[in-house]
Amino acid sequence: MKITSYIKKIFNYSPPFKYQFSLPNDFNKTNLDLPQENLVHSKENRNIFTSLDVNSDYIKSRYNILINSDIITREFILNARGKQYKALLLYIDGMIDSQILNDFVLEPLMMRNRNNMFEGDKNRIISEAVSNNITVRKVKKFDLADYIENCLIPQNNIKQSKSFEEIFSGVNSGNCALFVDTLDIAFDIDIKGFKQRSISKPENEIVIKGPHEAFVENLRTNTSLLRRFSNNENLIIESLEVGKLTKTKCAVCYMQDIANGDLVAEVKYRINNLDIDSLLSSGQLEQLISDNNSLGLPKSISTERPDNAVQHLLEGRIIVLVNGSPYALILPAIMIDFLTSPEDRNLKTIFSNFLRAIRIISAFFALLLPGLYVSITSFHIEILPTELLYSILAARESVPFPVIFEILIMEISFEIIREASLRVPSAIGSTIGIVGALVIGQAAVSAGIVSPILIIIVAITALSSFAIPDYSFSFHLRLFRFLFILLGYMCGFLGIGTGLFVYLSIICDMESFGVSYSLPYSHMENLKNTGIILPPIWKREYRSSYLATKKAKKQEDISMKWKFNK
Image (tube, rainbow, N blue to C red):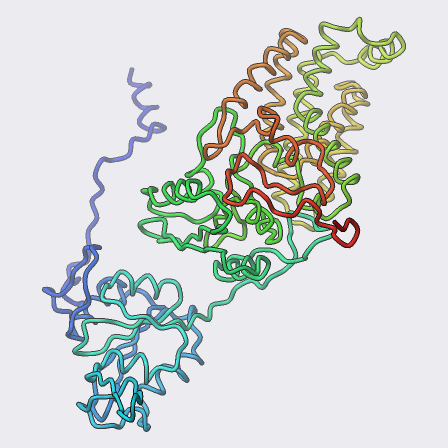
């Protein structure tokens, strides 16, 4: 017992329930040199005070200015109509453009000029009209806040706010805040100047015949791309905030005259009812607003191509953008969407249909090919031609392991190689593939660990998974491939057939934002425009009926009027 207790004492760690920290005796909490009655540390939404000193103390408390080195407060004297006021600027160093701040904010407010040297209390004329030889003047009393916004600050984007939370939200996103003594409002001035990635080619979606532009991490740049590609005033872009701490800005985009109102309301309802602290990417938002499913199938399309997003917008779907993420979410999505590519619309119909058929065959191989091989070699050898059967038996003669162990070794090894190639630096990523595919594969065959026919099966399966356009759907096929391998090993074709029946039954029961996931095959009337065979572009008169759009028709029956004139 003593030995056991001694060993537990050495190796068993139990964290204390309460940590005791001690501070130096000379530490004084009152060294902050701030009025303690004005320091409000709670995060409730407070209104701005009329006293500049109180506002300054509150700002220093909320932003911990004595600790933070990048939070800048600039106090100065503001000139307005012959009078001087104490003012304060709040901004974050590195997120603003210093040149704009100096030339269009500080200089007009601090320097004396004609705009701010009028006598202080005179009324000003808003408009003047002449009717029946009678001059009518609209006069408004002098208001300091309106005067600063409309006459002194020559900046294109400026807003007034009475809430600290709204002002702090603007400062955190790269704006600067102006506080003026005697005013219970503050000015949120847009002078963003932080470094950001410029528009470049899509990295994960290869472009063959299409625009070579991709979304970036800046929300406003992404919305401008949608505006430029759609070129329509009916495009609605609504801004929402998600996250109690990060307050991440999201944009819900849709065509007002096309999109179904109930679908728009459902998307906004789900986003507005997220009670989370932070949101950092569109991938997190996708998981939060999508219906859960036991198969892990994606319920929304993720794209970095603006042309693809706008194409779906014009079809009646919803686009969701997240600030800080270069991907757009397209809602809703059905199963056939993950087997199509944006390039299908840019190629001739015969080529698009050929490629779509290749992808469907690839999805079948990626999911079922290893399981079919295991079931045939374990239960149904009699269906193989005699010559092929002799070849397989001769190849497996020197392999000491059962087929299930053999194929699991190769599948897991390939997944390790795939993951390693993603994590290593790009300069040696190709080396990992050569070493894994050639050296390890050839060495395994030579050592008699696996058979050559199995290397071919695994290679075809891996290439098939790469042919799937959507990464999430490809990942789903890779994962469930192992399930069908086990079913094929245990019950042969019966196990695979039963598993496939359950698999398809779950898919038929799934929905994406109220739309059946198995469309268009569960409703034949939807098969015309969204089925396996893509019709010629001049036959695509109608939008998908399952979206219940406000405008069902998107082009005339005879769209090529130069060729077919009535």
